[in-house]
Length: 440
Image (cartoon, rainbow, N blue to C red; front, side, top):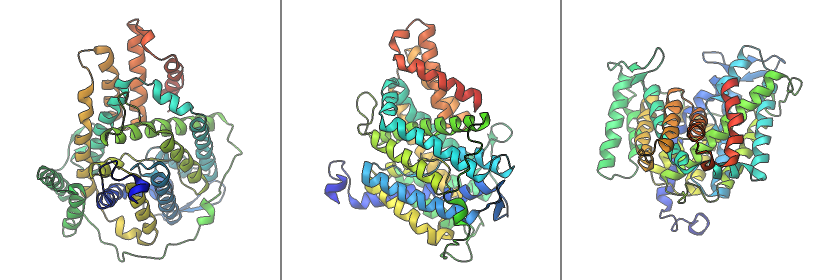
């Protein structure tokens, strides 16, 4: 294990990696509760019948989500040897799920869209085009990605816990709500433990608040913690493709949105998490980045076959990195736990937002340190990163933030007659980025 994962070379050990993997999973566990509702709909309904007459159940979506997340995350650890965890990305699932629920698209049409976007993703990775795009993005933008993700992650923590409200503008939450008070207590606990250099501070905080939430009704205990998964309707979500309407204008737009959302979300997360782990070189590039890209692309294709929306690298991987994870053993640990949830889903989905939210806020704080590397005395180099951060945070979308930051950087350079400082390929990249905003 030491030799395979290069533990000593990356200054880590088995215990640290396993602890980091558990921490990553704990901050990602919410996906098992959210994904079925994002596709089938929030509420008590256990299933829906799509436009083609297929019954799509929440139990089937949950099982396949756990299975694919586990398998692809383990693949990431064994093949790429990076501490990155993958699952169904938040964003595209809600967009396509809404179209499924109102009858605009069948489940098969959605999976066809995901499959095509995954194949495009895979082709760009195999032919090195994706790696080329990463290298032509200027260093100041790549450095700012980590800080941008930090603000975005902190936003998720505030939103999920209720410390801040974002429905009708930005406002303070209800500080008489036990959920909010527990979240604040969790943030204080993690911070104090970190100040005392206690290893596993984030994981301890998550577990402590989960337990503390029981008497307040914030943590809702299930009737049972383990169960045999309901295999009914699995056949309706696996290998369910409907290519009849794939060439319509609307569907082509959705393929475009799904692809670019996945592309820049993965790009931002991989560089951001790797930056926090100090794996980037002096130019802000990640050596061997083609491997996590390939795993991500394969994951999306496999996800489409098994009834999962876009599989992407999760920003919550930063929590594992902060816990000391530096190798693929972290990812393997996370993946194994995902597989176990197929039989113990009730045990893991009880973790409340009040427990995971503080972890996200704290990780956000840790990630914004990269912003100090940007030269604010040079407006041309500072404006793009600023736009990236505010767009990513206030639109609640990492991909949107990165796209806006690149456009702002290129626009300022061109307007100030410094177009020669921009890689020619970046001008070409701006065309689909503009279309991304037009059609998203």
